[in-house]
Structures are given as C-alpha cells and as structure tokens.
Amino acid sequence: GEDVEQSLFLSVREGDSSVINCTYTDSSSTYLYWYKQEPGAGLQLLTYIFSNMDMKQDQRLTVLLNKKDKHLSLRIADTQTGDSAIYFCAAHPGLRFGNEKLTFGTGTRLTIIP
Amino acid sequence: DSGVTQTPKHLITATGQRVTLRCSPRSGDLSVYWYQQSLDQGLQFLIQYYNGEERAKGNILERFSAQQFPDLHSELNLSSLELGDSALYFCASSAKDGRGGTETQYFGPGTRLLVL
Image (cartoon, rainbow over all chains, first blue to last red; front, side, top):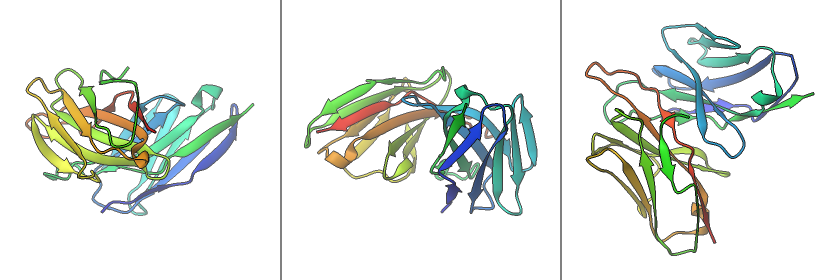
C-alpha cells in the first residue's frame, strides 16, 4: 500500500519562506493534498495538485510535484504566526473502486520564530 | 467552515462502554469517510460509505462499525471501549459525479473521545 512520509518538525523565522517536504511510494497516486491542522481543530484543506501537474500556486502557497522522485513540497511565502500548525501531506489513488482512500503522512509541525 | 458537522465535540466515557459518533456531510456529498487520529498511530483511515453502502475499509477494528443513512448522515459506533481508543475521530465527505468528479475530502471538526 501507499506510504507517505514527512519530517516531524520545522522552525522558520517570521517573514521567511517555509518549505515542507513529503515523499510517497505509490507512483500511481493521482491526487496529492496538503491539509492544515491548528491546535484543537480539525483538518483544513489547503490545496491539492493532480499528478499531471508539476506546480500549482495559490496566493502564498506553492506546491511543487516531482513525480519521478515521488516528492511533493509545500512552500509558504512570508510565513506568519498564524501559519503555526501541523501540515499533513496526503496521497489518493484516484478512481479505483473500493480503494478510494487518503493515506496521510505523519504531519510536520511548523513553528514560527518571532 | 468545511460544511461537515460532527457531534458531539467531546465525549468522555469508561472502558467497556459503547458510544456513537455522528457526522453530517456537506450538502450534496455522497461519500462519508471516518478517520482516527491518535498520538501513536497518527491519522488512520477507518472506513468509507458511498450513498449508503460500504465502499472501502481501512484499519477499522471489529469492535467498531459504521453506517450511512438514507439522508446521507453517518454514524460510527465504537463498542467495548479500551483506553487505547482515546483519540480524535474525524469525518470527511466528498462529492462524486458520474465521471468520477473530485476526490477532494472536506473534514469535519472531529469528536474527541476520552476513555477512562
């Protein structure tokens, strides 16, 4: 089955860019997602990318996908204190009947240093 | 606000007991997914229902069961509870159209279960 890995912690100075990395094992993963979880809250969908794309930009967020290396990254420009959260990468196989499940990474805890 | 609602927000119970968690998907979404988030296991997929029928199963224990009702809300039943079942339980929903549609899942705020 799919295995998704992330580093556990990242500390970034306020105003700098944050880059959160993720690797996955199933090359047929069709959809790749980034979710944000703030303390005591649920998961919030930030952005997603289809496997036929290599980059997607959405305001301060840039997602880069290297399909050959099965590597996904999320870049947050001008990181603010409100960006402090746990960020989860998730992979989805697309339409395979009976197996449409998201596999999540362990999450990366992003800490902003003032 | 994702549009997915879950009740209750918090639940405290004792070992051996049974609880029911409820989820209402976003309007129009046909699929409901249940996840468990715990400190030692991370975020794990439990089960998916699509339009009332079980669609996919993940790491769901036999003591746990779920169902999706005609109005598309779903319930997750946890029985013979153990200390290790203490976790945050999330529900998510997604929309599907005839050509596959989007697989994006929108998560509810979760139910925090504490088993004492």
